[in-house]
Image 1 (spheres, rainbow, N blue to C red):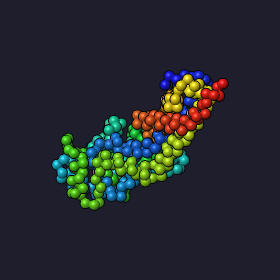
Image 2: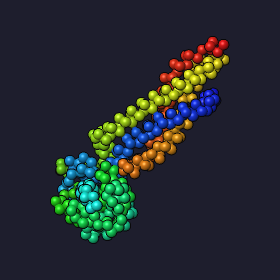
Image 3: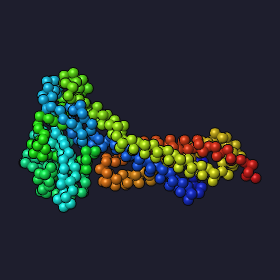
Length: 374
């Protein structure tokens, strides 16, 4: 490692350019992999703030924004199990938000529930639930796109040709539910969507008593309830959403393909940079061979050099990815966070790229002939 460091610092200008190229390669991997990992998190973004242990959904359930409906009476049947403490109806549907200034209608995802029950672990919603009992009132997600206009308290907006008053905002994010999201009461939901009724719910949220096993209760519910309902634990719902968004939609496939291409392109860049670095320092390698270094020893130096360059190049790529992802999150509304999983995955890939590139570049070492030094 010491020899590799001295070779790297021999010509700092060129080494800096080489490390800069590796940083760009790793930045590409950061961005593409970040998008790919954000896909399943986007599907669970809203669910992750909701309080439930088991969810009942329609057999037609595709994802949260296209959930279908199921009979509310299935909740009462679920309460027959002693382990079930609460069974809460939840309503959701996409409506049209008309922007008066432009006359353009945009989709907004509306969620509703009984204000007497706490659904979300979000203080901005919980503290305003009583106010939602007032007719035609809504809370709007601050992540709603700016095209919807200013979301200040007291603003009257038109949703589904009905005047609604904004009484507050909350910060969550819309995930894949749409360009905007709002929360209201179940009674206001019926006013917005008169074609719906309280007997047909979008989701049935079950909370279990302390100590109850969600998997065991879910199995009993599947035996108890008819075929017009699906039963999923939180973990099963997360796996369902992940499978849907990553394997069954173009979104996941595109970002997945992009992540693979980014890795391949990144490895090609690292390999080219490393090969150039070795060729430039071929006389030094020939000198080492002349004083007794074996092919294996020279290869270990190349591997150490590749790892050093990858580790140093990783730092600026991490900083740039953090800044770019923050900007992209504001534009795309996707949860593009620099999580520990993402950082560690890219770091591992950087080391893999360095190792493979070092082995691929080893053939250049054969040109290191001590005879050419004289």
